[in-house]
Image (cartoon, rainbow, N blue to C red):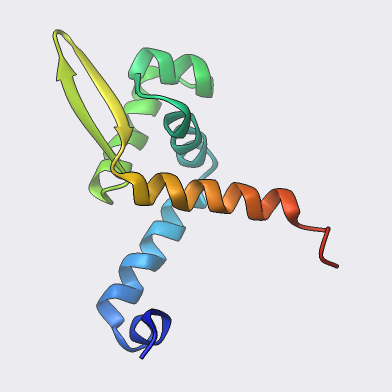
Length: 106
């Protein structure tokens, strides 16, 4: 049985995958994820990269952390954010490549 077949039959896993896609459907969260795919950042750096207030960034980071897409570490007085693991980075990279190729296969 393929992994995709198991996903279709596993409602709990299917809901987790759906939640990830829902999280990525928000432009602000996607911009944060794309920024963190480039490098680790603190809230101030994300504020500059995304162009939103610190409170808006912090709110979205909390949502992304809840879905295990982002993790953080306190270094001195600064909290640094990064993608949770290589799977998140690979997923984002694959989606970007797919988006860049759209239209080439029509």
